[in-house]
Length: 129
Image (cartoon, rainbow, N blue to C red):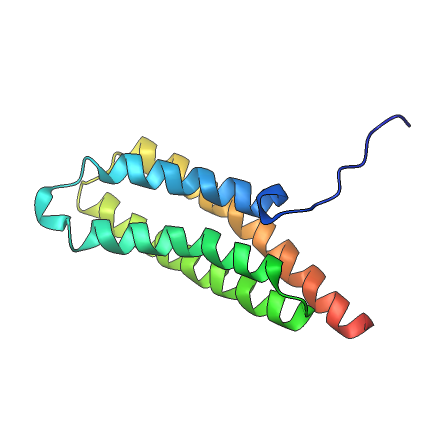
C-alpha cells in the first residue's frame, strides 16, 4: 500500500467544506441572473445562507471540543436546509431552470451526507472521551 495518507490540517481539506465552497460559487453565478427586484430579497438570503454553510464548517473545524464542533456542523446543516428551501422557491418562481435546480439540489444532497458524517463522527468522539 503506497497510498500517501493526507492529514487534514485545515478546514479547506474537509470534503464537506470543498463541496460547500463549490455550492457557494454556483449560487453566486446562478443568482446573477435573478431579477433586480430580488437584490435585497431572495438573492441576499440565498447568498448569506450558502456562505453560512462554509463559515460554520470552518469555525467548527477550529473548535477544540467535539461538542462545539458538532454544534457548528449542525448549524451548517441548518443553513444548508435553508438553501434547499430557497432553491425550491427560486425554481417555482422561474428564476432558475429545472436543470440548474437539479444540479444544485444534487450538490446540496452531497453536502448533507458529508455534514452528517462530520456530525456523527464528532458525536462519537464526545461519547468515547
